[in-house]
Image (cartoon, rainbow, N blue to C red; front, side, top):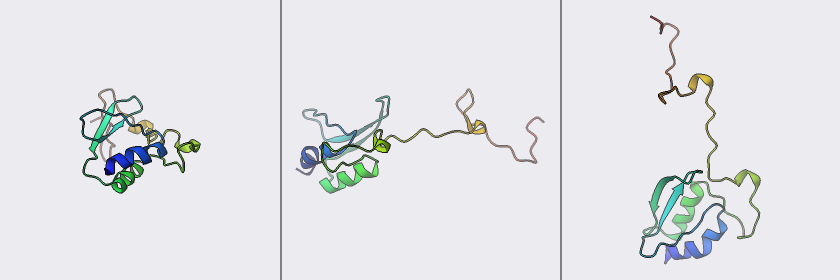
Length: 110
């Protein structure tokens, strides 16, 4: 009953949060990347409505005052996090590893 109340009353208030009903499946929150790749599944069956709301907000979903309220521009892609900006020395190499920093006393060419 707690999850059902969240689904029917709270989901419409969250930006970028959608409900898909799968008959017979236990309720779970499925987090997707911008490319719709699955990142994580969080079971909701044992959580209260308040706990689910807290979790969704901690994950960065924007909660509107009403279902039709406008979403501020800075939250349009929420909860997506901006990609980290890597400095040239932090950029991954061809093998996908980030090169380690060298100490001043160390001579990498020796």
